[in-house]
Image (cartoon, rainbow, N blue to C red):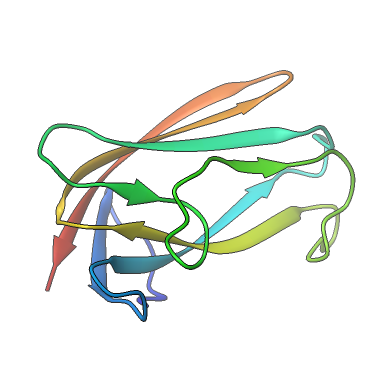
Length: 111
């Protein structure tokens, strides 16, 4: 998996250990002032690719309960996982908490 940063919404992917899937490392986190639950969903935007948000290419939303995570540091709750796709293309994430909703769009490229 690629561990490099997302720059200008472009993500480099590599082959994963899961046959048929490409992957990149993803770390979801919340700021210290938000300790509630959050839900992350992914969706291909055009094209025929599929997206999975859990390690092992499990196609399901990522659900993070309220309170500290095993990786909480200085109040930031972090959830490291992988994002798996079946093809390069444009993908969207929707992240919902009890007080916010964010949409993130990335172009996934194979280099």
